Image 1: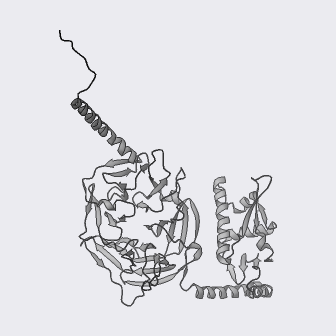
Image 2: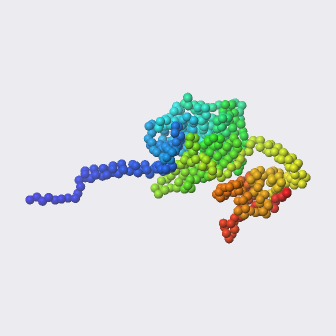
Image 3: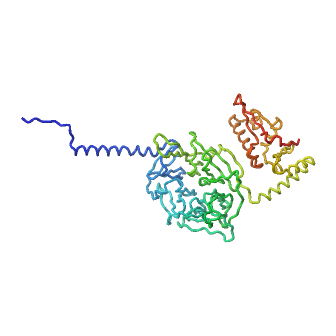
Length: 508
């Protein structure tokens, strides 16, 4: 009789098949979770856990687009949701799929994308990214000013091959090749630079540029690049440059993102102050700052250029979030923000640059003001005025407050306060140079408004007075200071800085 022996051992071939099947099944199931971990589309926001993406606008619907390697996302403005779509055709070089490598060029009738540094040009058509140029990667104009005008894409300045470029190139949509856009032989040319502020005024066909980084002495061995402070305008039909002035030190933005042109302003992010979005009007010589943080207080990413949808009147901003529990190296949150909503959060606005002939005009203006004051105020004020004009360096700053003409003078110039500012300063004088918080709110109140709006108005007026005072007098101490009660920190009082009170002469 043969006894059967039962064994728990498994045939090696069977075991191999089991482990292969199990591994393959786990791989298949991990695909959607892996995709989910890399990209998360939600209500109003798109969260990316990688930096392999670029942004743009749909040429037909005006919806915001986010391009990744395997698919692209589109934001439906009505439902506020992001949806993923497959490319019909994708000719985009994968090395360009990083923020800053592929530059969105807004046009009235298309959606075009330019390789940073010049060269490749892509168009988004029928769910496809199509390359339309017949050139090679130039890698010669990194950080140049790019814009669209008269069916052509222009690229001015930039840096490449160890040199800053002073020239301008153009790419025609009708003849997809790059050419140099020649200047008038008689025109003065700005120093070569990159990473500048710029704006195209399409009606005037003028390109405005300001500051940037370049090398004033490129032929000198060991010379280094530096920040420029000049402002220029270039007329495209005449091909001529004209210098407008110099940026003041108090508004010198230095490192910033590529500007985004909207209307008569260019918007950019200061890389050293990534919680602010700046708006520059180069033609009208103003710069403004707006708060740019989301509800979770994430700061806007200064290295990723915003995108504007002209049909939606919104801006696509990219915020950087801290590393989450998944321990990814980077987290980016993309949100569409109304431009009107953003501009309600204004922090400051002031002059950007001194016009080229500001000194001559300033002298003429001072002479005119002096003659007017001489006629209106008489001998008493003239004696005081000349006393200030003879003020010697090293003495404490001297001021004259004329309560009738409602002007404040510092040495030989007028501090250009608005009526709203002078109302506040005169209120300080009438109350012994000090105001309680409630009294200050009464002074700045403008009709019926909410408490929150009144607080914002108060903060704005105080900031404007201190900024204008510092700008005109070049003084480091603020003109108006806030003092809190030591026993009750909620109680505030506002004073004219004692440093200046003894130097203020009041003419009634």
